[in-house]
Image (tube, rainbow, N blue to C red; front, side):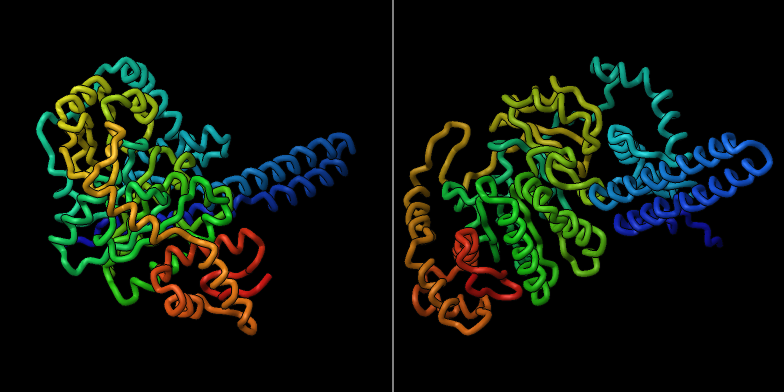
Length: 469
């Protein structure tokens, strides 16, 4: 028998960030500054003041530069989750063993593009890989020597998503079919796992798409983030996450779905909020014990562009949908670490074999497939740009019901103005249930309160309550 197990050196994303931060913090810049001062004085006493000044100045400059580089590394570790370039020795080797070459090289490429300082081990690995693979990279640009990742067969992608629920990062341009995929997966999930709860945070408020999730998800928080201010999106999203955390306490194993993650992430970045990354890392790092899972859907696979970071996305299984008319975007996406090298022309052939003119990549098998045709539960066919009559009438009625009118705004304002001090969200909702019961939905109240805040009439949030400005 043996206790040998190198995987004991593996850590979750948060732990790796902590190790990298501590490594960057231990930059020895202070010692270098002191050394420069001591050497400068020593050399000056035994030689000339000019030489002493030169020696002391050199080490002082090195100390300042070390401190500057360390501060930059700590900033990028905290904000982007990029850690590989900082790790040293056994930590670097363990990180490479746990996450693989592609992930490490993606991080080193990003660090290099940002002119961050590398540790000696990261620098040696970076130079060795660049030298070893320079010819292979040139060949890949000509679509030569491409590994076999194209699958001519079919895939039941709904079964892959719902037989065993995993943490997913879905990628697809607008109109690619992400919403339709989520809608079908939610319905299958409810059939296979009747007790499973679904909490949806939706970054788009489009009446044409209400049918995707009505009557299927257990809770939904919705905001049209495209036209909302970053601070509004941050307040709404952080409130939605707080609602999810409260909901999970009584519903262990709740699946969190975040749709339109790109616009949400972009607005959160502007507002200096890390709520999206924090929640992804939190669930992927410790969700197994409670059965919690997360699905996040973006329009781009690149961190920064979708508002996420490497630590958050590295633990998600990737899923990519591309329409035959948008194959060209794959030439940009192929640089992402989400999937292996592939031939765009072969992916295009798979899309043409699909009934819906799409190809799908599933990270669970690391293969591309023709996209199966799915049922459209929305009120709009994006391919033909036509409305679906059978659901349009129902959506129109629900849209009227969910319109925020002046009566609702005034009713909420009157309640807050008539209260002494702080008015809780639950008190406001109870008041609306009595006065306008059809408008007492949480999403509607959230939007109405945000509108009052944007008008400068009230201050506060759902956690601490509201008061007159």
